Image (cartoon, rainbow, N blue to C red):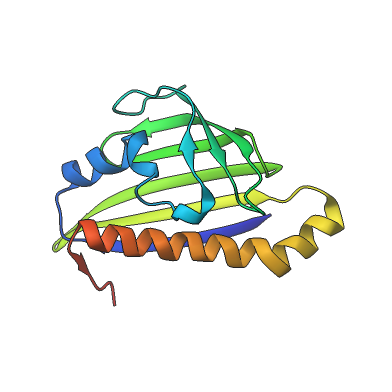
Length: 154
């Protein structure tokens, strides 16, 4: 199993951060354009447990890939989990955690995932997937810093 962790400090209220992150429409805002990310279902303005959201992404050679996630846990305004139901990974579990901080909020992402195809999946992870996920989360940090004032966590 692989794990990716990412953290950013946002100078905003927990409610404003929650309103942004819990709106499925904002996924496109924080996803790199080259991935061709489009929501294909008709999600509500805010998430709830059991919500199924379907997307199309084009991660390799612009070939469309269907991805379906379910919101499995919600503890507004602090926490939610999305899990892949159909898509490129054998397993995808993404925790979104929002903590209050004296300068605003700290937003943490913890993604646990398994690659398909055994040894070939391990090789693909080493050669491409790990780097691509890192770039996606770097883009996310940039997009968030354009939308919100950020602060250093050091």
